[in-house]
Image 1 (cartoon, rainbow, N blue to C red):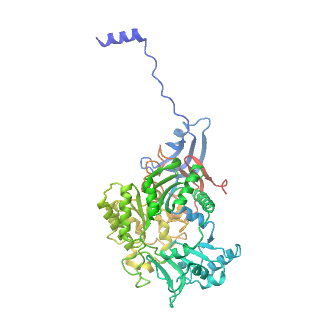
Image 2: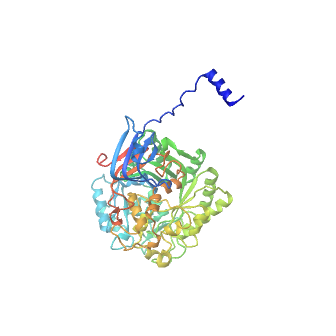
Image 3: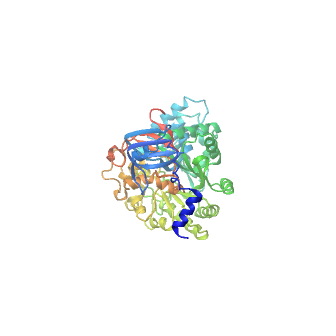
Amino acid sequence: MSRLAAWTLLFAVFGPPGPPARAQAPPPADLIATAGKIYTADAARPVASALAVRGGRIAYVGNARGALAMRGPQTVVLDLAGRTIIPGMVDAHAHLAGLGTLLRTVELVGTLSYEEVVTRVAARAREIRPGEWIRGRGWDQNDWPDTRFPTHEALSRAVPSHPAILTRVDGHALLVNARALDLAGITAATPDPEGGRIVRHPDGSPTGVLVDAAQELVRRVVPAPAREEVRAAVLAALAEANRWGLTGIHDAGVDGGTIEIYVELSRAGRFTLRDYVMIRSDSATLRRFFERGPQSALYDGRLWIRAIKMAADGALGSRGAALLEDYSDEPGNRGLVTTPQERIERVAADALRHGFQLNVHAIGDRGNRLTLDAFEAALRRHPVADHRFRIEHAQVLDRLDIPRFAELGVIPSMQASHQSSDMYWAVNRLGGTRSLGAYAWRSLLETGVVIPNGSDFPVESINPLVSFHAAITRQDASGWPAGGWFPAQRMTREEALLGMTLWPAYAAFMEDVSGSLTPGKYADFVVLDQDIMTVAPERLLDTRVVLTVLGGETIYEVGRNQ
C-alpha cells in the first residue's frame, strides 16, 4: 500500500489527527531564593544567582528568571540581594553530645592561667550542693605563662569538698582534684594503664593530670548523667550547630544510648542535622550494630549509621600523639599507642565484611603509620574497592606515608583549625624538620585525595569559617604569622569550600544526595552576609550566618532564634 493510501485509510477510520498532547506542567516550587551570588560546589555549574526548592530537594539552580518561572500561589520567595548562598556546611569531625555537655559545664576555653581555671571552678562550687561533681572542659596549658601541666594542689584547696574533673581542650587529658583522686582510689602505687599515663610528682604521687587511657580511672566513678540530661544537652547542641550554619556533622565516637536519643528526636522531627554517626568500637557496640547492618538516610536523611570510630594514639598538645622519634621538647617520650595495630586491623577486617567504614583517630607520625599498615593488611585479606576508610586528624605525617593515602584509598579527615591553634608550640614538640609534615594539606591534595574539613568541636570553635579561614591563610584571627605558617601547604578558597561541603559528603557516602546545590539533592543551604569567596582574609571571620535551611525548611534565622 502506498504511503498516501495508508494515510487516507487512517483518516477515514480515525478522523483527522488532534493537536499534540501538552506535557503536564510540574508543580510549583515551595521556595525560591535569589541572591547576589550562589556558590554551588557543583563543577557543572559552580556559580548561580537563584535556586528553587520542591519537596525538600533542589529543583532548579540558575538565574532568577528560570527560578521565578516555577513560582506558584503558595511559593515562598526570598530576595537575598547582596547576600551569598553556599551549600549547607558540614563538620566532618565533631562531637555533638560533647558540645551539649560543654554548654552545660564550666567553660574553660580561652583561660589564660591556671589561676583563672581555679577561680571559675570555685565559682561553680558556690552554686551547687555540697559533694556534687564539678565538670569543666577546655583548659590548655600551652596558653598559660607556665606551659607545664598543672598540679591539683591549688584546685584541691579551692574546692576541697567537691570532686572536680576538668577535661583538657583536646579531650586527651584530665585535671582532677584530691577529692576525685580519693574517690577513684588513685595513689602513688597505682600503675599506669596500657595506653595511658598518670603524671606524677618526683615522689611518685599523682599530680592530678591523667593522660589518654588513664582518664578512665576517674571517669568510671563519675555518676552518669540522666537520660533527660543528655537529651537536653543534645537539643542545645543542635541549636548551636544550626546557628553557625551547620546542616550536617560527622559525629565521632557515639555510644548506643546517645544514638537512641538521636533516633527519638529524629522521629519527633526535632533532630535538625544530617548526622553521619561513627559508633564506638567496644566489642558490645560493634556486635550490636554489625548484626543490624549499615543504615543510611534514616528519618528523612537525618541519621546515617554505617561508620566506626577508633583511636590509635593520643594528642600532640598533651604529648600523647605517637611519634616515630622522641618529642623534641621531652626526650625519651614518643607518645602513646592507645589501640594496638593488631586490633585496628581486626576491626578493619570486620568492618569490610559487614559493610561499615572504619575511621581511626591518628595524630602522630607513628600513629598514622601503624593505622595505614593496619588498613593495608585488612584490605589485603578482604579487598573492597570503595571502602573509604578514613584517618581522623592525620596531623603529623612522615613523608613516606603521604602517598599511601591515595594508594590505599584512605581519606585524610583533617581539621584546619587545629593548625591555627597548635602552630604556636607545634615546632617545639616536633622540631623544624618533622614540622614540614604537619597539617600537610597541599602535599596530600597533590596526591589526588580529598580532605573533608572540620573542627573537632568542642575541642575547637564550632564556627566552620574558622577552619575555612585557617585553610586558606594558615594564620590565626589576628593575621599571625605574616604570610602564614608553612604557607606552601595552604588550600585555595575553592578547595576550602569543597572541604566543608562536597568532600564531607563523599567521605560519608552521601555525595549523591548532599554536598552541593545540584537539582535532586537535599535542599540544604546557608545564607551569609558577605561573600566568603572574595572578601579580604582579614574580614572573613566577621561573616555572619543569616539563614540556615535544611531540606527546604528554615532551622535558623538571625534575630528569630536569638
